[in-house]
Image (cartoon, rainbow, N blue to C red; front, side, top):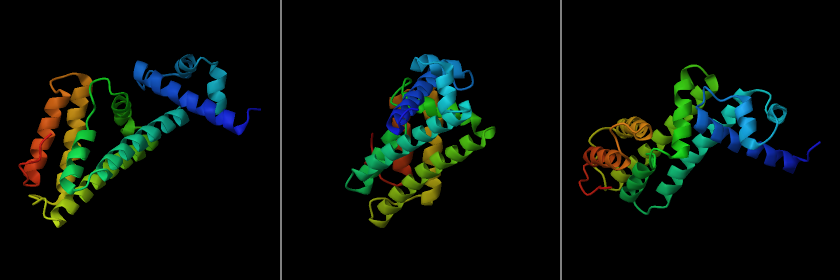
Length: 201
């Protein structure tokens, strides 16, 4: 029997393989064989560590949500004032481009929220953490006199997250929206919402 450290390493290897398989094939088309091929192991190895493929998918999604939210929270915390915090959060909410692996992964799972309770829960966590982060930054900015909110903080926060989701999808899908254009639109809305024309990408 593998030792605990070896087991942890193997599970992490399979998580990486699952991420790659999902990005290559799409969530709906990914099977145990695809994960095994990515990891260079037999299918039995995958099913030994994860009895159901859904369990592996849950961990991949949970990891992606935690990494995305933690990155944004750290970006905000690194700034000294609310204006810098808001700019940092705005920049970190969009894909870096069509091949942003983390954002592509998150968008793969989003349509499943209607069908899979675990995806729905994690999607709510992702949305809630992002709205809460924006709301905290907006409220701190208003309290310190940096911002003059034109609508309630929770409403502005929800609108910013909705814009990120919509624009981010188009960046990933390579439709009409580039990353730079999406960022300009986000900053434009935010500058009006907080009455700070100096806020710029």
